[in-house]
Length: 91
Image (cartoon, rainbow, N blue to C red; front, side, top):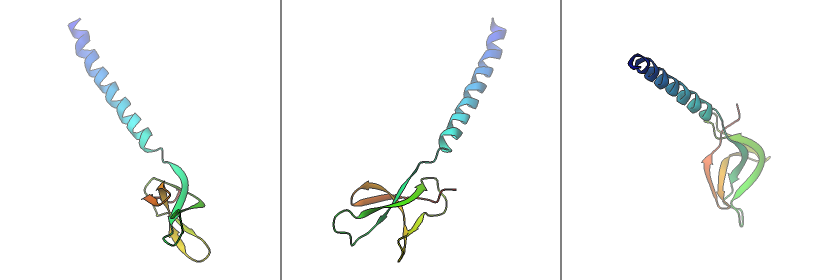
């Protein structure tokens, strides 16, 4: 019985560690993809304007959108007047 505990405990710890490492890696690789918003200070009511461009939360090159006259950096929306987290290009 004592010999079995000497073997089982290290094996259980090893399997628990490997499972945790896999779960962490799998969770980090799931980037959130969503519509980007740009902040327009001149807009009368809602300052965050929806675009048709989809971006991700996974860090990379900054997500930009051109409205025909200028490039705009895109953000996630918090409220109608608050564009918070910067979005990134989908890789």
